[in-house]
Length: 338
Image 1 (cartoon, rainbow, N blue to C red):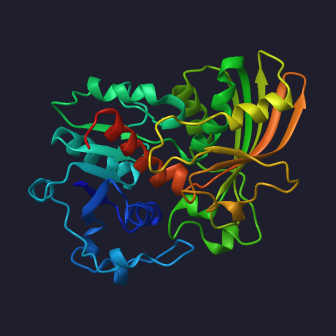
Image 2: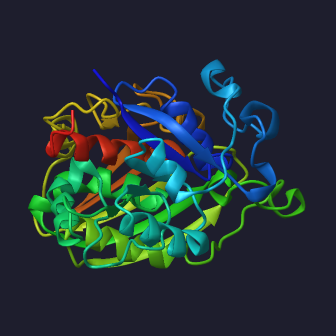
């Protein structure tokens, strides 16, 4: 089977590294083209990148040479799919340009998430919104598909099975790892032995995105806290439902929350519950198969029609690059590109 040629733009940052790692041996996509900042053009990837992930860099990407950003060169080299790990301010200019030149853009940036014709896609929860690419002009034109904010990705996955019971209120406090701030991120003077109970813009994103993704309009209360761990975002959640359901029903709904299409990046159980007392923890962020794509839940409680639990999402994989790759897989499958 011929693979679809892809580009990774912003390939050396934390999210870009996950794109490179996840696509090193992807069955559907072949990375043909990679870009980074101008200072790194023509440098060898393995020599110039500060590798942040908790395992060795795949040998297949170490000798890749970083390209200068050029739409014409990307076209000449047969690139169809573009994975964007750009900062939001850069993405706001680059991603519409890429779309207008016919590329299929799968973005981790927030720049275009709130456009009416741009989906914030999570295949397990709102696959029907993928059809918005047709409003952008597909198949005659390119498009942009975004993934959710990293906290929202885990939250939307964990609460989607309960939408059928009517979600009236969501209360969530997120405990977010330092890798979510990118590299070099926060000063060690600020975060060592400390927690910071404010992340600019984060709480507003979570509230706005969970409503758009699940097409619901509950009252949403959010606190976001930066904590001194490297990977994984932990979230303490309370849901108020219209219906009073049992804890056994909650567990059954999570267990039955499966995607029928079995995309390469979709776990058998996308949301996995454990009754172990001290589970989940950020040290489990890269557990599961595929690594980092499972949302873990635990500490389940009930108070009337309120359901409480703790969840863990890998902020760089399911909550970022892995989610974008899964979105591209959903597109390829739905529109039969292979």
